[in-house]
Length: 282
Image 1: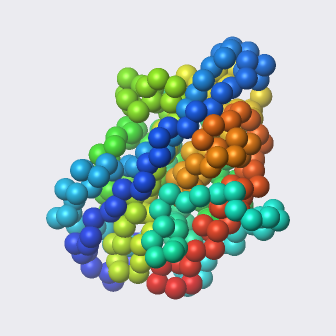
Image 2: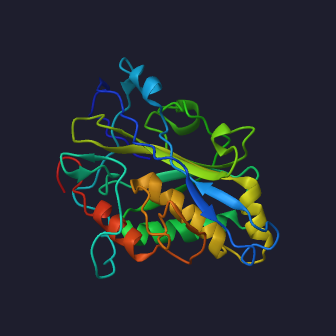
Image 3: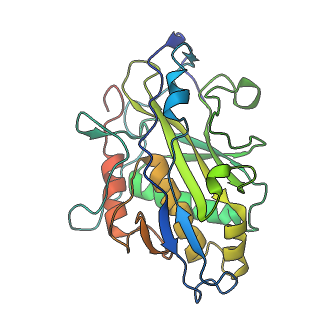
């Protein structure tokens, strides 16, 4: 990552945690995943920082902001015709909180416990996300960082002096208690304004249950529909989409876990997030 050396460190208003809806309930049909018949899974979204924890960050110093381009690095895809079908996790003054589309969205992966085709699965999902939002996503490789809901925003020994990249980790309920019960994934991002340019998501975490994805992988298709739908759902939460009531939508709170890309409502919502002006203009 490249950071603006001319910007001083500053103490700013601490990040606000995004609204965390209750875990969604998705039912996987036995015919789709024969190795885990009648499996009920949940796709939830949680804030990377809880309210009480975020309240204690008032004295934290934030790193220098990434150098942003003068214009967006990409344009959102043209969504399907129609209106609505999506909801946002965080809206301030009528505008949804979004990642800065004038700067790349960097991410790292902790692959411990991942299915064999995890790289293809994430490449496919990130391709869908980038096409829908116009965000330029950059794979910074693998990491040994463990998922933690008290994740430090700056980890110089791992990532240098800037804000940490998005972390995607494969885990289980022993390590990540939020995966207990029917939950097979959760995601969230930290909003903040480290340089006065405007509020946006700074970084985030996506946690995916290893056992569920390995079961999907055992079905025999690379980036198969069930696993891809799970990852797309959590990436939708990462960039700011909330649950919707339509059981056929990627971001449905309840529905059949299936699909080969984002559905119409999700595409409209992602395009709206991709159209949010860059912080400070652009």
